[in-house]
Image (cartoon, rainbow, N blue to C red; front, side, top):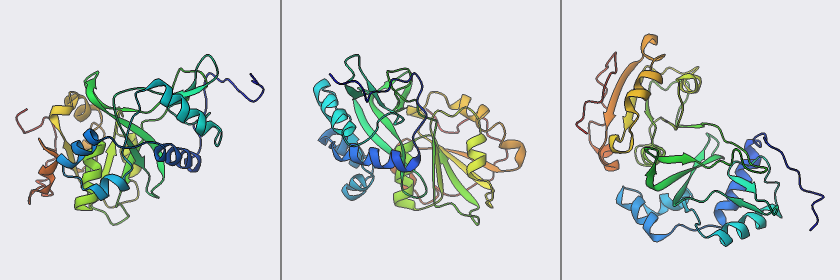
Length: 264
C-alpha cells in the first residue's frame, strides 16, 4: 500500500468555509433521506420541497457503505480538516456512525459550515450532536457553531433557539430573524451575532421535552444578556407546529427570565 501521501496529525485545523461547503455538499449528494426520517420531518410541519432544499440526509449505519463513501470523497478532496471524517488503522477513511439524520448548518451566505446529527434516540439527554471526529486518526473536531438568518442592522426582534430543526422551520415558514445554537456555554457568540444591530427583543424558543438543560442555558447563556437591557422571553413549544399560532411572535417584554412558564 502506498502511504506516501498520507499525513497523520493528532489535531487538524478546521478547513475554511468554502472547502467545508464543497466537501459537505458532495458528501450529502452521495446520501439519501430514508422514509422514516422524511415522515418525521413532514409530521413536524416540513414540506417535501423544504426537506429537499435543506439537504437532510440519513446517516449510513452500514460499515462498508461509510468506508466506500469516505474513500470516494478522498479521491476528490483532502478530508484532513473536515470535521466528522477520520482514518482507521488501515489508513482507510470513514466517518461517525450513529442512528439518525444529518442537519446541515448554513451560514448567512447559504454555505454549509457544519453538520449536526439528529439522533433517533437521545444520547446524554440530547437529541442533537455535532458531526465531529476529534481524537480520531487524522480527525478534526468541530466548533459549537451558531446559525443566523434574516438579520440586518435594522432588526429589532429575534427568535433564539437551541433546536436546529425548529430554527429551520421558523426560517422557512415565518421568514423572521432567527439565531440557532447548540452546545454553547455562554452568551459570547450570541452577542457577537447581534453586534451592530438594533435588536432589543429576544424570544428564546425551546422544546422542553428535548431539552434537559433549560436551567443551565437560561442561567449561563442569558447571564450576560439580562443586565444589558434586552427584553427577554421564553416560549415553550410542545409541537413544532406551535410556531404557527397567531400570538407566537408577541413579546411581553420580560426583563428577567428564570424558568419556563409551560408545564413539562
